[in-house]
Length: 385
Image 1 (tube, rainbow, N blue to C red):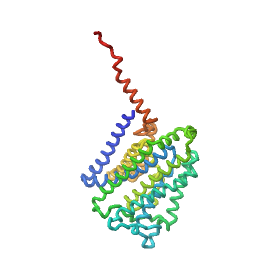
Image 2: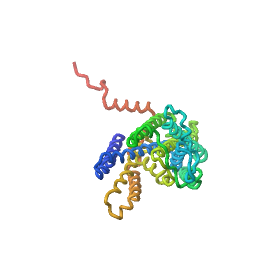
Image 3: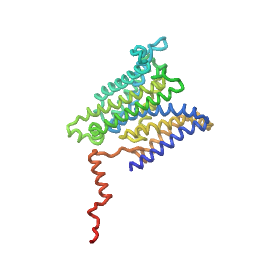
Image 4: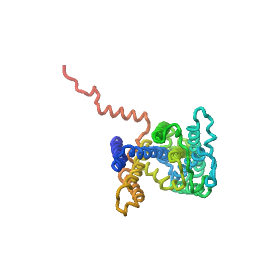
């Protein structure tokens, strides 16, 4: 069953990739145009996969219903902006921070091209982890629906603070001119390749770290909490503390995704961080890919964001007037249809979670299956002499 699901997921990924490559080529007939469209889209999908992995830790393993993802996504982006940007220089730019130039403390190693960004990623993760810790201590004892309401409210409060308090983050003007790592080392035309490799390395490192963590006794304890808290309590473990750990870990990864998103875009504003774009879309990615599975989170992020990007190419065609100005609404509607269809026909996602009790038991079951498939030699009839 798992192998069949993976085959279906591979076919869907191949089909989406074909559309992602084929539509811009059909419109322009230029390979360079296809590359210029596809590479930023794949880079964004990889960044969003980090956030989706964080959500998978919270919901797929610990059962934490986080509906305030946009808060951590936004904080990661804004912390990166205030760490890497230069100080404000005119009356139209008012924000705290602006530490970028002062962080160039290793001029012999061109530290201005990497050190401020490394510190910004760490600071973004730390800020989101601290917020998650404070929220977790206060809210993780709530029931799932009440927890979701509280986190939605916290996210909206933070959005309003960003908009109204202009001295903090420049209000509705946003934060333009965010520097990009390694930008001075390569030409503008080749930078998209460098940044894609950088994001891919970060994603691969996080993927391995999360896989090792979730396959440990800590990960098995989280899965046990998701299924039933009573046995975990009976074993002497603190359910609340384990949930806080998962909440903090997942939120830190969301902050890391927000940090990379700010670097990629070069500018951010409060309008970007809506509840639909900053929360709902990541739930869609996890539902489609499959919760409780790190690979499913990555695959879901790629599929949903590729479908989102494909609509940008559809807008270039000569569509009926009733559709031409409403492509964005059609896209949102189709995204909802995808989620409903997935929940009705395959609620476990394209790559469902693998049922696992322990590695020892898995090996034992496989050994018993092999023994049943190949009868023992002692059972074979013995020929008469």
